[in-house]
Image (cartoon, one colour):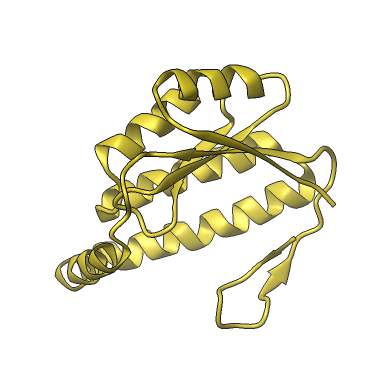
Length: 155
């Protein structure tokens, strides 16, 4: 698995060790306004430059921690980094109460981690679950009235 930005050559690659990654993708039911979210984030950055730099450094550290967790097969740590990243996105203002609710439902049902995916402002949440809790997490999210898709990532 390779983690990279979309315009650069890969910065590093990660070898998945251990069991596959069980992912649930949840549709929040609200359409993301990516262009508006990008503009909102730009304005927030301009108004909060020092805070922006701190968030950026925290996010960079989380990417490194997530990479190490993947390489070490530590799914618990990987989940923690996902949830911590979601909290940074909340602080940036690109999450919504609906996305936050889905993250909370997933975590309360036993997900290892959860975060919004994409530009924020709606769209989807992605969760990491272990095999033992996968069905319970999926059912809790479906009972909240949302569409949930299963995905498995493996070598």
